[in-house]
Image (cartoon, rainbow, N blue to C red; front, side, top):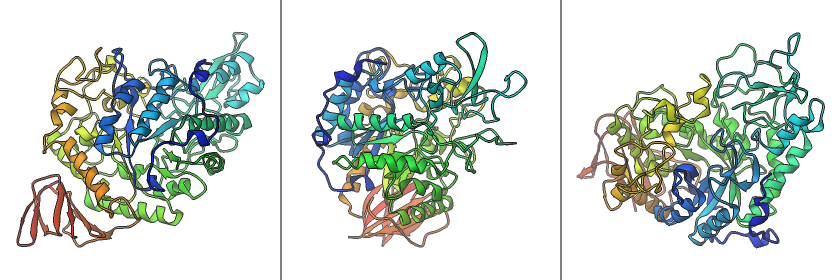
Amino acid sequence: MSQQHSAAPAPTSAVAAVPAVEGRPDWWRDAVIYQVYPRSFADSNGDGMGDLEGVRTRLPYLRDLGVDAVWLSPFYASPQADAGYDVADYRAVDPVFGTLLDADALIRDAHTLGLRIIVDLVPNHSSDQHEWFKRALAEGPGSPSRDRYHFRPGKGKHGELPPNDWESIFGGPAWTRVTEPDGTAGEWYLHLFAPEQPDFNWEHPAVGDEFRSVLRFWLDMGVDGFRIDVAHGMVKAEGLPDLGNHEQLTLLGNDVMPFFDQDGVHDIYREWRLVLDEYTGERIFVAEAWTPTVERTANYVRPDELHQAFNFQYLATHWDAAELRTVIDRTLDAMRPVGAPATWVLSNHDVTRHATRFANPAGLGTQIRLAGDRGLGLRRARAATLLMLALPGSAYVYQGEELGLPDVVDLPDEVRQDPAYFRGAGQDGFRDGCRVPIPWTRTGPSYGFGDGGSWLPQPADWGGLSVEAQTGDPGSTLELYRAALAVRREQAGLGAGDAVEWLRAPEGVLAFRRGEFVCVANTTGESVPMPAYGRLLLATGEVTEASGEAKVPADTTVWWSAS
């Protein structure tokens, strides 16, 4: 195990670690949270890979953007078989990202700037280089160490077949056979993702004990919460039953699987909530729970469990008024009985950026390798952002979407690093396109990302989309985000609450009121006449008003204040 543990300043109690951020209670209910993918955000040492010090130096940019919190994708010690989601040590920072002292400095600086820090937690699986797994391999069949993972004898005369028919989300079987210490072919272990990511056995009490300790370690460091990776995983159905005939699995399916969304996960989260509630400072849990319905997602955010859960049904909805209204209504209706805020998200590190998804026809899914109509995609992406930020609840912004970045769909095969790409099935394997390092300056070896190039190649036109190029340009996507987040803070009706009042609107148009605030989103390809609901606050296109009527352009969202 890494020896970084003693390097960080260790608060003497939970009270000593209370974040310095001041703010209203329940800040998370309408927060705008910015996802940083550390390896692609900012590189401080010129090695081509982003790091924690790079993130720290860019915190003032995020404060000025107007977000409330920063969620950091994994930076733990890891062989990086799946970009850090294969964790070898949950209490150490991987050297490629820095040290625990860097993490401590980042948390402290963020709090000084009024930003909260949420870190990723990966409890479904570890790295195959985790000390527990290495010990399990070394000690052999029947050892107590193997009980912390899912080791099983194979089927067939000589155990040559996997224990069941489960498939990896990344493609291929979800089981890998090990070579035992005596050199013979032996048991199989379960990995719902890459072979380098063996699944923990959450029936073993040591696993729960370990993760409650990990929670306290980072809470004592001062973090404001955790985003839980594969929050719908962890618990497997008793006996690990076969699936039978089934299409290749995806994260967002239509059924409850014997390894996903099992009711037992909720017992884990009730225990975790007790740990979190020991700490003051409004700490939170956010679930990455890919469930068949928003109603099942609501189970994760009951009052004694987690605080938020990502709304993947919304993310997967195309730019269509009727479909969007259905998902919005179902989401609000599902969250209201459990008293949890809705969340809204358009992009993240696992899906094609929405500027590219919306540039293509509906029905292609959330991973697309087609550039589509970039102009159309950007117009729709800007309009979708304003719609999202007008809805009640919390919103998530993925790094670079405030620049209107498209997905990089033409990366050469030889530079790709997504493990799913090399398994030939499962997820499409094109997640690298949304992970290309973001541009900060018009010029330079990596457009300001760092002095030593970037771990994935950036497009030649990246400089024109950079922070430097867009700052001060009133028509830029960056300035649109800055303006929208400023208005959201000023308008009491935005973010708060759990309902919208739908207004009469033409087909293909969404219109709703929230107090004195009105939002209109035209998802059609034509301009539409609408009432001018008051003072124009913001619009993603050129709106003309005359005699109490407004002409809303195609693929445009408008905000009005009736006060």
